[in-house]
Image (cartoon, rainbow, N blue to C red):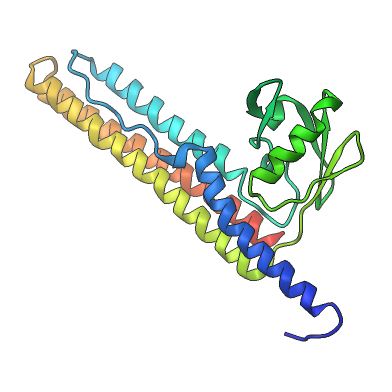
Length: 232
């Protein structure tokens, strides 16, 4: 690395980016419930194989949907409304996500523009952004708030890519948990003579096909987001 005029500021900026990578990971996981998806709960009531498969697919779909939503909050080197949409703001005596009280746009590749529906909430929004630990310094002109999104260093990009991989794996674990408990439910129904052995085997095969489908969806989501992080 060449050190010249402004090198101290560059080092400080990179340290700030590294810190933001760390807190963003924690803040992101907190915002989506730590990606601790609710496991499929084996029901004691009698269920048909169609009902079991519907329930399994619904839960797997929700796991992937939550991952999709969460990945929008992973930083890239480019401004993205999803980075701040979920920031918690206390306004009118209640806590609410930023997107409910303001429009969020990106007029430039590395700038986020926040325009409150009610200018009276401007200070509340500023406070929410600061408390979010995302590492952005709100710049207000009394009507709108601008956030500058600094480009990410190579090291920070790698950390973000690793975080994406870990979140994807957590989603897959959740999907496999649904498979496990779905299979348990099928076994319970067969044991109770509610379904035949052939129906049990067919249901388990369908559950495995759903597992493969949703794991591949999670992999594709993570792959695309990692590409955004590394290529910006």
